[in-house]
Image (tube, rainbow, N blue to C red; front, side):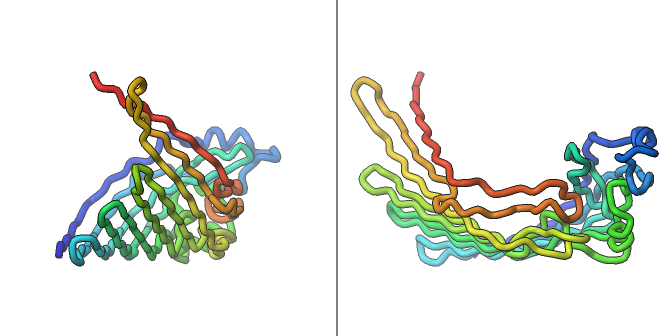
Length: 258
């Protein structure tokens, strides 16, 4: 049994890409004029991070883990996609809190390996205090008095995978599940959940002339499921995004020794 606990104090400066008030003033009276010219400067983020967890070996093959974390944030930094050109613009929430629990399991015996992870999380912010011109006034007023989900907040996330080495060939499969990111006015809605399955096979060939040659075939999104990661709505989300369609990748690796 392994127990751990930790504390960290973080300081994060804002990214350098900023839109100045002078730039905003040039669009006054045009069709690209913002709803508000309020553009308080972006601040550096500071946070307290707490973490505690346990890992338990069950026999020689299985290991179970459980971890909990909490992050208390002042001037929470985030980046949004704004404008018709989808420019990334940093902004701050006056307060933020990020917390959750993660469970994991790993198994290894002989040529067989497997893993599974499950996470529950919350990422919340309140009161936007910089780059206010990028937001609708009604949304800005709502966020000033309410904790809202961050655009990258996903309540449930899970992944699992396994591989088996058989006669020099490694067969593998993995899957990822997400309950859906946020959408809608002030991120009050949730997109549909999604599942993506991947598969792969790898083998090392050896010959007298070429030596060793590692070959791997990977299939991403094996069942070609179409799912939306973002729908273009929500705080700081300016364009829809989708998960990858089915794709095949072949990798060749030739080790050399000097």
